[in-house]
Image (cartoon, rainbow, N blue to C red; front, side, top):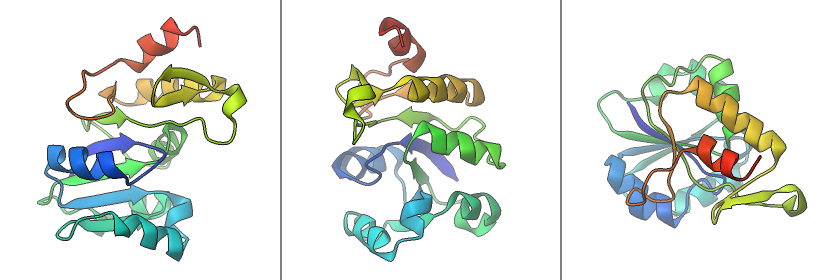
Length: 165
């Protein structure tokens, strides 16, 4: 079963492996990312950081929604998706998040730095990102912002309001 959905544009990296994996006690990581799922090299690179004993599945959004065998109800699972827009698309094609916690992690400024506004040290958004976050907050029951599990949870809507975005 999916225990936690992590939104993080870096997908698999040190915080995921050292903090979130243990926090969830995950035995499986499912990365839902169309680009990575269709690129053997990217899939291989993602797998380099995953500890032995943890199964990695890199799938497209369509595969995730249509292939029931991806989720093993008896194994704790961490799902990672790149950004809020991707999770909204996943929900729109049929995925039901239900009570699963959705944790917003890293949203870096990437290539379009000039249009992004810093919300936190690890979250930069433009107007479109802000709208996606507002939409997502209406689609899921438990959306929070946290870089690592030990960090105090933050409310993304309050953060956006404080920054007038």
